[in-house]
Structures are given as C-alpha cells and as structure tokens.
Image (cartoon, rainbow, N blue to C red; front, side, top):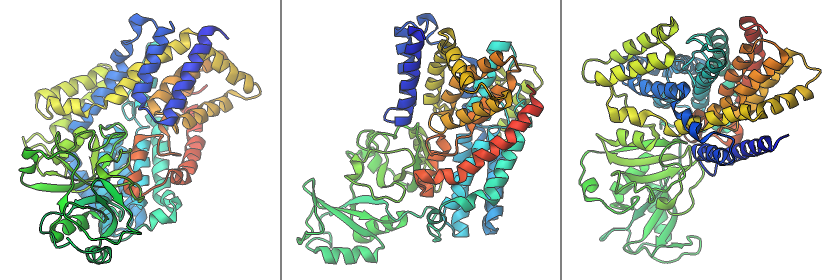
Length: 594
C-alpha cells in the first residue's frame, strides 16, 4: 500500500465517519475532504472544481428546477384531488393509492419533491379517516424512494452511475434503461408496503391517535407572556393549572427574570412579565392566547413591519435536513426580524422540548408551528427549506399555462429517450423554456435547487477520480475479491448490492454512488465480465435506504410528523430490502447478462 493510498483511505474513512456522526453537514464535509485531497496532492488543483460542471451535477440541478415547475401544474392538482377521495376506503386502498401515484410521479421528478407534494395530502387523508399519520407516512416515503428506480432522472444515484458509464464507455444509460429492472422492483415494493409493510410499523405509531387532527402532537411547547391587566396576575400554581386544563393545555414551566422556576416547589403568585411555558395541540395554543389575553413571546426582537402585517396564518412545517433551520435556533436565524415569522411551538417526535423556545436548536424532522403573513408564509417556508404540512395548498399557475410544464417536461423526456440530445441538454432546454415562459421565476428556480447536494456532488466527483488515479479502487476491489475467492460472479454481484445498500443507509445516496461506481466497474474488469450489471446493482442499492431515518431525506422528513423513532424504520425496511435484493438480482442478470 502506497502513501497516497493510505492518505486516500484515511480521507475516505474520515468522511464516512463524519457523515454518520452528523455533527457537520455532509456538503461541508465533502468540500473539506476535496480541499485536503488537493493539499496532499491526490487531486490536481486545476481539476479540483471541475466536478461542479460535471453533467451529473447539471442534470440534478435541472431536475430540481423542473420538479418545482411541475409542482405548479394542473396535473398535480388533479392527482391531489383524486387521492383525497380515498380517505373513506380501507387502509390498503388508502396506502395503495397514495403510494402508487406518488411512486409514479417520483420516477420523473425529484423524490423529495414528490414527498413534499403528497405529504399534506396524506395527512389530510389521515385526518378524514381518523387514523394516526404514522400509518401512511412511512409507506409514502418508501414509495417515493422506490419510484426513483424507474428512470434516469428519478434519483441522483441513477444520474451519477449513468454519467460514470459515459466517462468510461462513451455512452450514457438511456432515460428508460433502468425501467426493466426498476419498474418491477418499484411495483413489488409498493405492493409490499400497501398490503404488508404498514402492518410492521410499531403499534404505538399505528395507534397514536384517532382524533381529527392532521398531526397528533400533544407535546407542542410554546411560551406565553403575562401582559398588563391579565386576569392571571396574582393566581397561584393550582389555579393556573386549572385554567389551562380548561383550555386543554398543560402548564410545563414558568420563567421569571430569565430564570426557570421549579414548578414542583413553587408556591408563589403569577406576576406581570412572567413567561408561562405550556404544552398543547396547535389549535389549543391559538385558542389559549385569545381566551386568556396572553402574549406570544416570539422568536426574536419585534419588527414593526411584521407586527403590522394583516391576514396572519398558522401553519405546521417540518424541518428539512438541508434547510436553513437545521442545526440553528430561531434566535440565531432571526426568524422574526428577518423573515417576519413567529415560532409558536416545536414538537420533536412526541418528546417534550427542553430549554427556552427561542434557543432550541432545530433538528431535521422537527415539526414547527409557525405564524406569519398568509400571502407569504408558504414561500418563506420554502426559502427556509421547510415542508408545510397544514393549509399548504397547491400553487397553480394563474397565467393560463398550468399544463405548459407538463408539455415541456414530456418533450424533454421524449427528446432524451430517442437520442436527439443527451439528457442534461434536453432537461436544461426545458428548464430554460419554463423560465422564459414565466412558468416559474428565476428566484423560484434558484430556490428550488438543493445546493448542499450540488456541493456534495461537485466535491465527491473529483474524490471518486482520485480513488482510481491513486490505485485505491484497485486496492479495495482486490481485497473484496480476496475475501470472496470462492464466490461466483453472481454472489459478488449480490455482495456489491448489499454493501451499497448498507452504505446508503448511513451515508447520503449520492456519495454512496460516487464511491461504489468505480469499485463496481473495477470488479467487473478484474472478473472479465460485463460491467453494466454491477453498475445497475450500485444504482439500485444506493437508492434503497430503508433501514434508518438518516439514509434518505424522505425518511427523515416523515420522522417528526409520523412520530417515528430511529428504530422503527428497519421493521418495514429490512424485509423490503431483502425483497428488492431477491427480485432485482435475477432481473439484472436477465436484462444485463454477465
């Protein structure tokens, strides 16, 4: 093992450990590893940033823009209205309708975008059917991930693997080359979650509540200040608790002069300026404020413009892993003074939030209750990277061109499929056309791009190249072949898929594809067999992260609204991954023979 290989393995191992730790976001980690690789001479400084212009990066960016445009089309509104009709049906019918339609859509738009579109619909269905959201959200998340297996643009790993194949052979995987394997696998997966998977969700999540709320969360925590002339002034703890009980709210704490008061031993009286910490459902918080004349503490210094806004709306939203709020506080992001939003409450998988509300450090999957201007709140939340869950509404183009995004997108798919132009060019032309036709604005286009993923890809692509140039890929594949000397090529193919799946359960799927694609190709070359089956195994394995909430954004996004725990996912995810392996390996061998 050479010095370069030792350094490369150390950098790669360190990056994987940091990805799993999650203390720093993966785009920062990837970019730092790229810079270290340049410093150690593993990556040519002149080629260090060429990854940002790679066709895979451009394709991912344009797909995100097109997904935003499609979300404004009449097609999405029709699908959503159709899905809400199933709220009165049996559970398999409800889950089957939601999973089937969302998986088909996620084959053509970003799967996070597909989840964002249909999660509010799923929650409305749950409310009307009076069952727990946890019954439908995990199947929906898994279905949107499965749908990405069908086409080239369904998920970033497919795009990365196709671009890598083009670098080596000069030929991309075509738009529907993934379908002969991906479509049966996705169909089998949707059937599984529809009839069997949801039954494996822990009973506590399946029976979490049947009240007609969209989200059954009783542990929302918010802070209310005692104003002048309040009827609560002078009342003791027992009286305060009785008053809040009548409002279906819980008294959780009291803050006086920025100091917490221990309720268990407190025998005093409420004074002007005291802050009461309460726990309640969203509608009870609003009613309590109005009934008792209390003041919302808010999330930062008051802003005159925000305070004077009319038409305020309450909305629930979930914090995205790549959003601006993840890892930050409401005070630190200046939620009120900069964005005109008030943070009313925070819920974290049913657990009570500790500490002051404005200093709570948000985590991906947290559900926030936000108040803001009705006309702007959805747009502001999108800018912050939050997915609205209540009163979201689908934004349909008002210019009479609601079907234009569908026509342009279908034209780009057709042009790429018959080989008129390459997929990156076809999708870029469609995105530019939508901008000129004002289907979406430039600001919406830039806001729709998931910049952390772009930075991750742009940084990891040169790292993938360094794995090959330093001979590290050969070292890894040699070790794998040495350990599996008695294994047939078919079993080695299974091993590649299993390793890729395992890595994708703890690391971003795009990074997994960048790391595993060169290894798969080198294995095929050493075995002197067709490389396409191995590349297909990597594409499928990298997209099938069902064991943990950290393996895929969609898993994390439903964690809070569904009330799931970290250990809930493998119960449905493990049998699903075993089903995928059992079905996809024979299909790969038939469609892409060794």
